[in-house]
Image 1 (cartoon, rainbow over the protein chains, first blue to last red):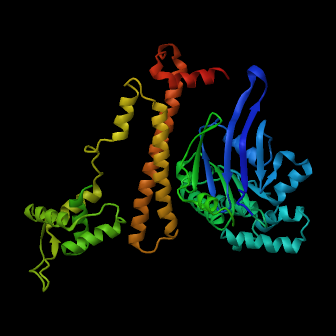
Image 2: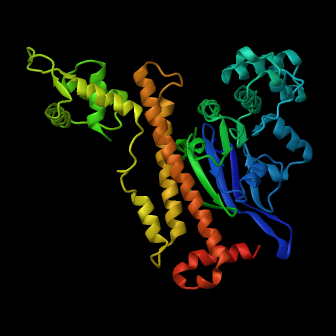
Length: 243
Length: 201
């Protein structure tokens, strides 16, 4: 097996509107996220960061180019397959946590598994493991309103990566948190990636982007620069060719 | 960085030898500002001359002399803790000077300059973050805590530089759209590209 990235955006463009009113939100962007890698995207508002994340999560379709998640062409999927992909392969983490208030931490994390047909008990067991991995196993039966922002965001990360999901798409996950809590959340995200997940992090905070292996700068829909991967997993694996 | 005051502050805790002062200074600041032992002895000699420190007894078996604060030295340390740090002698920042010149000297691709610097500063920030990753979140002793705070200071400084560069970039872009007619020389083509791109939307 050759090393295929968990996420591949292959020469992707996204144009909104037509002719004179057409706006190129993304213009020929190619981006790979491998297992074990955290990639941060930085750029001013309107640079295409959110569009990029929506395309990666199958919430939007590119005008040109293709998006692959774990080797599968997202553009060629039916709505049903797409929904299954979002349940099984990837998870989102948002600035405002987006937990369901009437469910406990464990129930929030177990939800995508249950929707995917797993029995409640098994789903709960896997959810508890996921909470353990983000360091809050003891809060499993708490409701979101009884948790701090940082704790809620840990639950969201656990939910994003529960079961076999290996790709987390994070949109300003520290935006609502103070600097220490934000850093703790980044540590958790980082450790989940070190444990084998792939992460795509959109942020405007350089301090948080610096937790990534690679930082990509987006401007007017184009990748203008990147901090590169000095002998990171990508180049190492590419040189070996197989895993 | 005032080594002088740093050494005085250490001596306020207890009398120390030169080599001891050096290693204490470095371990508490995470080795960010390494000192050579010659620097330490030169500084001690000046402090002794100025009446701020004195030898605490004679040389020991290994010929080492311990130093302790005089009353005057103790007062100096107290002043240091209570007064704000003087910003008067802030070192000149090469990047700021470079940018100020770049926007006024014709023919410089300022946007490129900003981007190149931002990428480099972010790499530096990544390196600092790796150092944080290497240490555990809960600092062990006081010295480790001190090292964390030093590291955070470097992190915040790098972040501030990046924010300033973001600001410079958006400021330049706005400038270019505001007065495109005066920026017609090809030396400023990078701005023109920017403004025409924006105008076409």
